[in-house]
Image 1 (cartoon, helix red, strand yellow):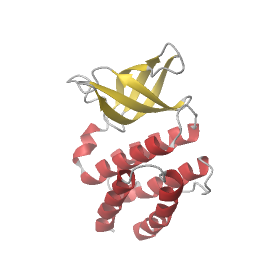
Image 2: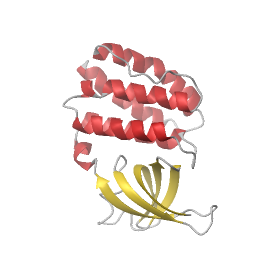
Image 3: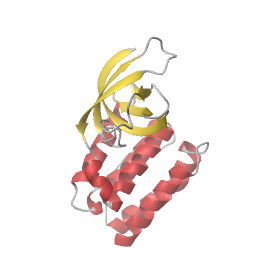
Length: 199
């Protein structure tokens, strides 16, 4: 494997003293796990933040080997991690995508939708500007993986959008995260609590 592509960094788990195993979402290759040497070091720590858009160069000697990755930062989500609502939203959509999608299966609509959603979370003046897009992304994810959903963005007041978000909770938990740890849904519960405070 030798590939270079823009990617959304979904997760970075510590490995050894300073390395991380990153899960990256690309448009052409889907989710790819890769070893990033020095990923927790001073230079790369700001790059290996979930939600960041990176240029990934992946190399592996065989398809069964975990690829090595070199990452170059294209767009950082770091400045928004100090804000509770954007940080919770970025954490949730990245954890959901990393947990739900199978590796090395391309889902170009999901890549485009997630990139747009992350931009909306960071650039909208308030959560009212991106909450509908977040629920639309969850619905699209269910549809792309074969569990129904029309993928349309909910319209209306924030209270209506939160009602649609509550309805999706059981489907996400049952279909996409049934065999995963509860901490993924806990991230959604935290986000929902924060959104409820502004409704």
